[in-house]
Image (tube, rainbow, N blue to C red; front, top):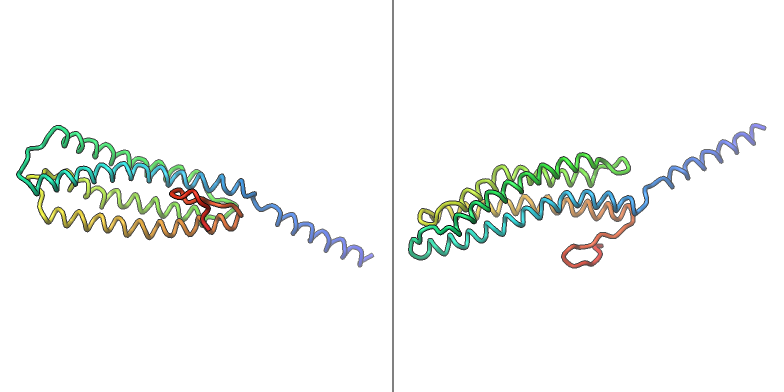
Amino acid sequence: MKRINAVVLIGGICCFILALASCKPSPDKAMEYYNKVLDCQQAVLEKEDALIILINKEMNKTLADSASANIPQTTDTLDNRTMIDATYAEFCAQIVKSQSQLKETGAFNNKTELLDAATSLLDTYKKLSENEYKEVVGIVKIPSSIYTNEDDNRFLDLTERIDTCLQTQIDQFTRCCKSFAREYQFEIEDPGKNKPIQ
């Protein structure tokens, strides 16, 4: 009788362990979670891209104007600077919105590695937007008639710092994305190439 009870108990434990192992979320659920996290990042990247395009456009004008004769500001230049301010504000607001959405997303299967990497990337964006990006926007709005080599050097230093900080965080986030996809057995695509990332 004791032997039968022991076999039943061991059989029950084995069934319980198998049931726990089969409770792992499906690849579809994992991919859905991954896409939510990625959407938070993508929204910030789109706002950043819009800001960078305007900054580069204005810098090209400023450098061309300062290299030639002091050309008075045109309405187009003033409009670009107003657009830069508005786009910068949208960029900052999107960071805050994405941070909030990411917090609401929470952990997946009681694991936070992907969430932590995404949060860290957004925290870096927030810090850079409040400091380096803010200063870059200020430099870009300097009229070409008083724009100096020191301004240009400061602009280059700031943009290099932004690139370095972001690249480190983006690399970390990418590693976590790949690890998450491997763990939950789904493929992620490289948005630029539309090919699965290994």
